[in-house]
Image 1 (cartoon, rainbow, N blue to C red):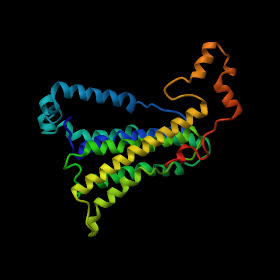
Image 2 (cartoon, one colour):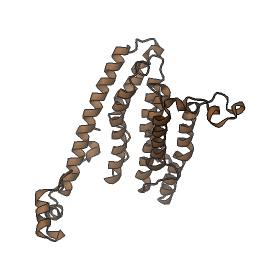
Image 3 (cartoon, rainbow, N blue to C red):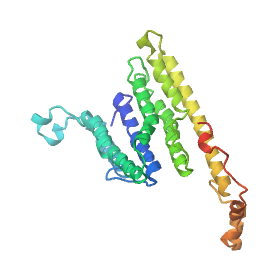
Image 4 (cartoon, rainbow, N blue to C red):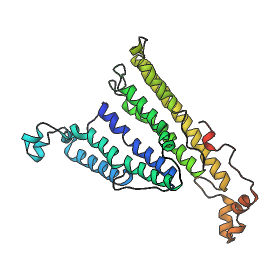
Length: 288
């Protein structure tokens, strides 16, 4: 679409994270994965694919051309292009077609258990911090990330940060733990949004070079922490179940080859004896 390193490009990168969070929050409370009439995994991906196909065939100028050149009615459409409508389309789709259904499903589930909706709404704090910090950072006139074309690096940095936030919710749901209200991945984002806006209170802010190095450090931190946590979670689950992540253990496939009944296979003996247990505190307590 030719958005480039702009605020609209940043909004386009941010918006898909929001329905992902709310759907994960919804699943945590309802124990059901809902796919509404309009959702990211189906309609969202189809629309994204169509946009890429059209951009590849007609070129990105398609989205900046006046709609009147395609549909006529210049007296009504004027010089309005598709990109002029892109932000409202994204925001209205999120606020009208997705979030209300998530809230209603959680409300119905909690009402059925005689629980109030208010505590569940407070669990929006992580995504509020994520979104508000990002908007404060990129929306600041003192930020150079978009001006210096570093949106791609920012997206690569925020991917593990957001991924950690949602996968903690999924893990908490599977292991019946409390809803995770914080992850250390959000700390650099929050700190960065504060540092970049220090000139508002008369203090020196970050220079363009310092801001870039801060982002690079955040990227390294987020990548290492997420990778370490992912390995820890995979190993904990695999050890508990007596399986491997990407391969079949030799003792298991040998038992299968020998035709051993399910109750005599190695993993059945491990689980029955209770010899394997997840560490106390769960994976959400590791590198929070």
